[in-house]
Length: 336
Figure 1 (cartoon, rainbow, N blue to C red):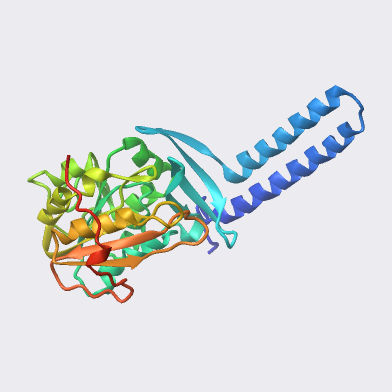
Figure 2: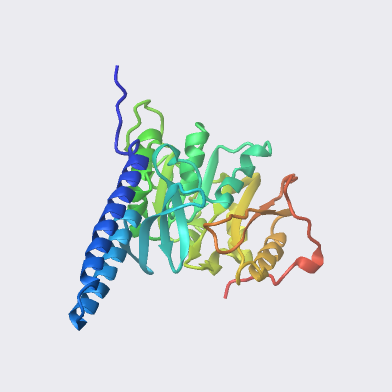
């Protein structure tokens, strides 16, 4: 029987073809420019400028494949760019930074960023994790990876912007994921009515909740989770209303006893400013018995350094944790 190949299987080949087309277009345009350069007139100079712009646009359109996305906070952009080893990744960029990324083809369910892989510490430490709440959807990079790797897992994802959810479905393989694991509009943990059937007939394992994350945490009917992941940003800035003592207490109210709260924290000024990291650790230390920091540094794609802060009332002994003392602690953040 011959192997059936779908559009996703062909993604690397399509990317290679796009590169070849762009190269051919460039050669043709350069050849034309050389012919024009033989002319001695202002018109020739103007034509050369137009030709240079055409070459640049050809490369951008064919190789990067850009897509502008209108979101609640302005504009975001989805486009393709290579990693340091030349492998193409599709990125979601908003506010001057990458909000999410995905590989294409066979690796489309693997996380691109190191901090997404760091979230897996919740599974590796012997902690029993069956139900997770992810605050911040973006391209659903970590939920996508976690659901494929852990068959018994259920993940609710809270994303404030419906346009981001639509972008994730269209360009980040979330519709394909939903077809595999089942999806609901609302909490899959709470048993919302399933809107995407699974061939196995099993209950949905992905819940998509379009609302403000803080508002969701303050709902009395929201279920309890084994772990909560906070990956919320507005462009470069963290969402402050999810970084306070009051927000941490709301998270704790929706964790099972000994459950884990994991926060992605990003440095500023090229890694030199760790003020928000110090403030986050100080704030979570007011609410949870144990707090640890794990570095999750990326080379190439990330302009700043990422740190995973893990907080719990249970036992916590992460092998890669960075020790800190009271002098490291920053200011405790509060609402208002």
